[in-house]
Length: 204
Image (cartoon, rainbow, N blue to C red; front, side, top):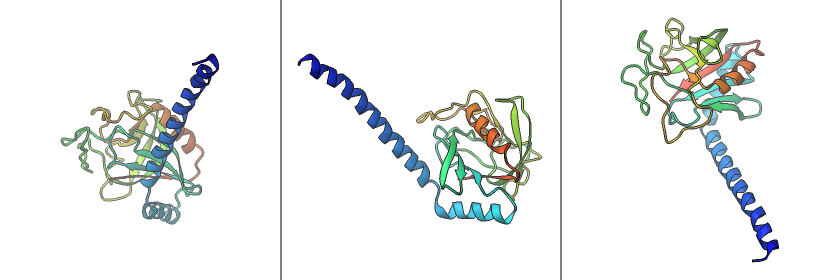
């Protein structure tokens, strides 16, 4: 093999790896988008419009997804795409395991509660980036959220990237949707610009 061939080979190999990475990224994005069926999106938008919520974006948290994969999504209604995504912890109570969360609305349960929430006021947090948002449960399955002090916040051990096949550790959430510092920074920047409340919907 002459020097020209060797030089071309050295250029070709990185390009191949780059193309493979792009294909993998595209497949991942498509898999994410497939999680958002048109019925759920339409229901969320209709709810926001009917109840005076922000109709530009909403937050989806899909607890049916492996905890080591992104399951917190910021959805852009107008452009029909995910703006931000990341990992999200579930509550540790009532025998919840890393792979099988238990859901409860009971005060003192330390469980995640399913349902639609109104993202409330911004306040100080001792965790993560030191910002949290109050959450108001809007359904019978999460009506105690505010009294349980269930809030949206971050915690520094939560990874900024997916950890699959490994699950997130238990004990990082007492029922709050806990995200990474980087995702919380993006959420905070977005929420501070809102003039209407944002919908957060946790489901499985």
